[in-house]
Length: 346
Ligand SMILES: Cc1cc2nc3c(=O)[nH]c(=O)nc-3n(C[C@H](O)[C@H](O)[C@H](O)COP(=O)(O)OP(=O)(O)OC[C@H]3O[C@@H](n4cnc5c(N)ncnc54)[C@H](O)[C@@H]3O)c2cc1C
Image 1 (tube, rainbow, N blue to C red):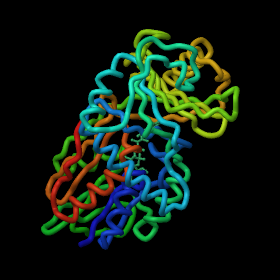
Image 2 (cartoon, rainbow, N blue to C red; image 1 turned 90 degrees about the horizontal axis):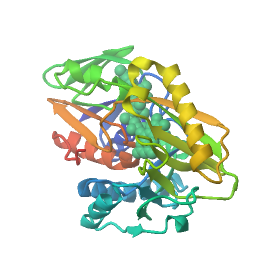
Image 3 (cartoon, helix red, strand yellow; image 1 turned 60 degrees about the vertical axis):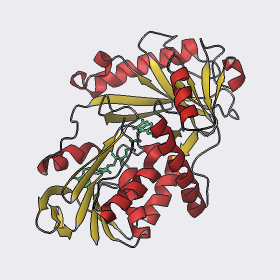
């Protein structure tokens, strides 16, 4: 069976790797540089904590596969910092973790958790299985694992023939029995050619990195949903390297709207996140040392979305990195079986 994977971000490479290990003939076509689009940067948050028990279970399956990847890579790809959720969703997420039998606790004294803040209203959910994903090490591992399948090429068209699919673009046509489109921002155009709808609306997002005053500090990853600094302003934060603290904020929709343009949203985000760091955090210097921009499809949350049309499967979502090894395994199994994978939705 010959399978084509479109896109060499973390999802395409994870899928190509899982297919190669199952003995399939695989070609993974990448228009640009592997891992350079939405999968770029220094770090991501891994967490078992989710709002939905099925997603907690899926993250637990992913965590086991992250350990296998780490063993194969020879370095730990996920840290042991843990993850903390503060704010109103903490109790519901705690119930979801309990339903999925995932280790967790609700902590009243947030001051004991090592977060860069003196106090936060309400209880916090502690997810000891969370931690920082080392993105450069993951990229190096996946590029090498999927190397036999990787080819440079921009896929312009999917021509569904009987049997299979012909991929046309900036390369000699490739014929495959099945295709998985994991092309991030490029997924909707290819999916539309075979009658699948993938969300097209986009919004801007920027993550900013600051210095920790104590370079040896290693706080847990933190999702701050308290809105205690300002209503409508929530963040995710993580130690993105020794002495580095990265903060991404969800701005009110009108502040991040696509029509405002990248430069305006970046400037607005910069002002707000710097003020948040200065006024709300402790032990974090407010000078920005790195900015990481991406576009995203608003409203997809933590869900992993998959759809199929004949021999073509498409996978998309906004917070896919943590689930990547599980998504790759699910897609590989389903492609080889000729089914659409059963992945928990949003
Ligand atoms: C700042 C930031 C913070 C994030 N934080 C987290 C987090 O903490 N935890 C988490 O789990 N997730 C997080 N995410 C989201 C996560 O990184 C993405 O969901 C994930 O990396 C997407 O991977 P992907 O493979 O689907 O897409 P991409 O990495 O975008 O890969 C798609 C690839 O397809 C290629 N391509 C597109 N069109 C074509 C075509 N027609 N032909 C050939 N190739 C094509 C592109 O060049 C690209 O390389 C974050 C993302 C960003 C940017």
